[in-house]
Length: 339
Image (cartoon, rainbow, N blue to C red; front, side, top):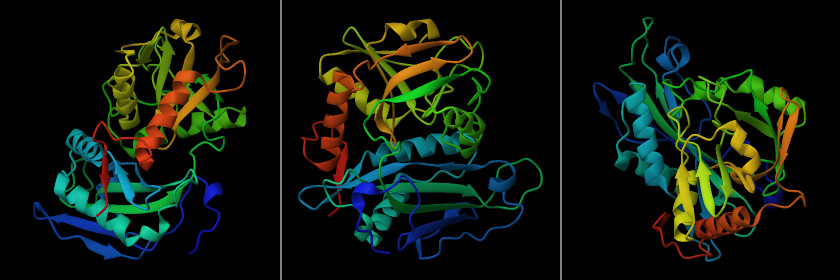
């Protein structure tokens, strides 16, 4: 496949040339295998199909003005997959294997890394599956780790433009002591119905509240939530929230800018006090929020009266994306360049 319209890439799946796979059997990982197939053959009783024993990651690679390919914070993704594997009893993928798999896959599909200056990137999807046959509820004895890539544009069609979101009170994304802090497919399956309802009502995504009391802000659809006020970056603290690597990056950047940072529960009553709010994640990067609507209480909170992103969100977005493409100094040590 030859892509010519890089500027209008959707955030969707486009087949690339190769993916890599590795199998865990008899208590150890085998060697990486290269495949051109888009399909997986597995046992019908595989634990990933019946008991949700699967994990995945999302990360990106960028081509700079110098033509070099830069991978953003891959070690943090490796650590998060490790934490998820420990959390739901998957075989742990060693950091060396994780790195070898993602860098091999990028090299094999280098022609799909979007050119500099088109607002697109190469999305990298590591996937870890329980493939052993079990009928009882128990961890698998066999696993498959694979990595595939696809070129993508912005997650939201509007790109770095403010969107409207809807507070969701009738659905929970994850339980307080459940799997919310792990990157497993079940958390996203739990969000599909509410996301569809939000889209039908004209909203970009949903804003979930905590599952226990419905008093605090949880996640912003598939992304972390943040608010800015009084030179302070505020983001929720909760075990039901996925630890976003983008959010971690924004926290470090805000500290470097001399801002205060607070990770704490955010009561819903605090929403009107923020000067700017947004959603952040690998896919969304930073998505400014224009309006939060609470359909149950029939109220809304307006943050972008001129229709433009706020100044802090804009500064953070421009700085982060410049680091990713090599246009700004990588003072935090987040980038690894393919040799």
